[in-house]
Image (cartoon, rainbow, N blue to C red; front, side):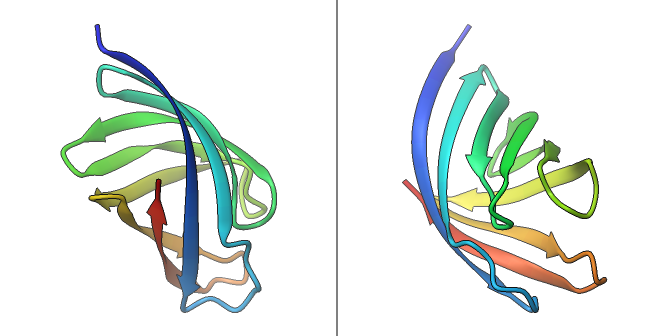
Length: 102
């Protein structure tokens, strides 16, 4: 069993969205084999908690802490610290979040 606890910090920008979003995201993660769980300060200035699985360069799972729904699907593409994730606003706008996590 491969277990790891990580303390991370991400910076992000939000493209195609209307609101003014937080771009600094402190993040704590526990990884067991390819399963991930953690907490981070999200773009809407709330705490988010997630559980999911890391496969190749993708993270897929469920996340809480956003205003539009209690629980949402989570998807991130990660490559060498850079990440891209789909974004959605309650108003119906879709966009993209791009960032770097260290």
